[in-house]
Image (cartoon, rainbow, N blue to C red):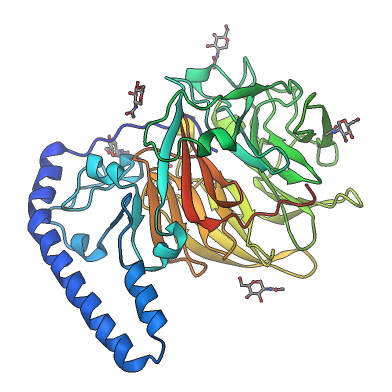
Length: 445
Ligand SMILES: *[C@@H]1O[C@H](CO)[C@@H](O)[C@H](O)[C@H]1NC(C)=O
Ligand SMILES: *[C@@H]1O[C@H](CO)[C@@H](O)[C@H](O)[C@H]1NC(C)=O
Ligand SMILES: *[C@@H]1O[C@H](CO)[C@@H](O)[C@H](O)[C@H]1NC(C)=O
Ligand SMILES: *[C@@H]1O[C@H](CO)[C@@H](O)[C@H](O)[C@H]1NC(C)=O
Ligand SMILES: *[C@@H]1O[C@H](CO)[C@@H](O)[C@H](O)[C@H]1NC(C)=O
Ligand SMILES: *[C@@H]1O[C@H](CO)[C@@H](O)[C@H](O)[C@H]1NC(C)=O
């Protein structure tokens, strides 16, 4: 993850109103044409399909759930005015399509960009604000579901001025019980009803990424200053939260600032992303190693680099069967060095070879808002990433199919098994219910 992210938007209100004014009539027109298309599709299916169940299912899918709305791409293919980069850029944090405003976008946060998103959200998706931490970015990164106790672990922002974390003080690890979140899923704002507990694991310094590992949790800790090295640390997810260091150097040299970690479900090796954010957020020295992705073999202890050439590699995950690796590149946001909109705000996909090496790097997606940060797949291989406006979702071929729109940055989020998701949005913590199930490797828990 990247640093403290600004949450304000600054679209010129006059400009937005103009768009909205144009949008209203256009929007009505597109609703009408959608109905015509729907009717036509029904007729087509009736004429060409022998299965009447299929017709029915398709029509049901077209019913837009209460907390969802369709965003029509064509409604913004041509805008009355298009602002220059000094006004509309990656830090604008959300784009308001004609016929919408921020409130309407938040009111129905499941944004359908493609029919495939209906299956992801199911008939009745819900989004609930379950906690707010004022100005403290408590809900930042490393969300890991621990099934035996049905808890979600996550960490505070490391290196955020508002938290005073980084050089002077480590961030902390926290957790919630999913049962408490599920109990309020029918409420939109349930702040205060879920107990956010601190996990007492003082040996883990400035943690940022995490994943299930052999029944425990492995954290990527960024380290602190010159002397507290960046390392992979395994934590017992039950009291007393005892820890064991898994890896703390590359041939005697410090990692820069480990950012994320994922276990490949096929070969069970631990892949991790060594990023630059400890340095870019002023709590780690200038990099002593190339910014890249490594693999660690827990059987032999061998460590090897598998991919480089990123702007700034950040989040990391695998497809459900481990044949693809996804890496987010947040190079556009260099925090203290500022933004450079020519740099990546992109997701790259690799093929994971039988021998565990990576091949065929491919540009999978370039996001429209902020940078893609935390990344996870569902059980069908759809790809989700925390971006400047919330969680965005692509199908396995890289088509944007929908968003869970927050109107602010989500650095990370994770599934808690079937149909449940926890979304971290710095000061805000959300719980979502949806149709999809998590596809991440949980391992032998
Ligand atoms: C990007 O757009 C925002 C408005 O959303 C503006 O405040 C900022 O100055 C722009 N950044 C640059 C580098 O032009
Ligand atoms: C760290 O502490 C020093 C000394 O108290 C202070 O000057 C500095 O602003 C602090 N840095 C951060 C990032 O909080
Ligand atoms: C949620 O409810 C709390 C407590 O009533 C209130 O202080 C807060 O402003 C609400 N938040 C939002 C986003 O509506
Ligand atoms: C924590 O302690 C238990 C009991 O000694 C041990 O089985 C477990 O492996 C330890 N976990 C870690 C991460 O050190
Ligand atoms: C893994 O899943 C992909 C589709 O997501 C499929 O193309 C591939 O054949 C699968 N590989 C194995 C080894 O099952
Ligand atoms: C922004 O990034 C581009 C592409 O990497 C680079 O050519 C350019 O020099 C950068 N601009 C600044 C101001 O650093």
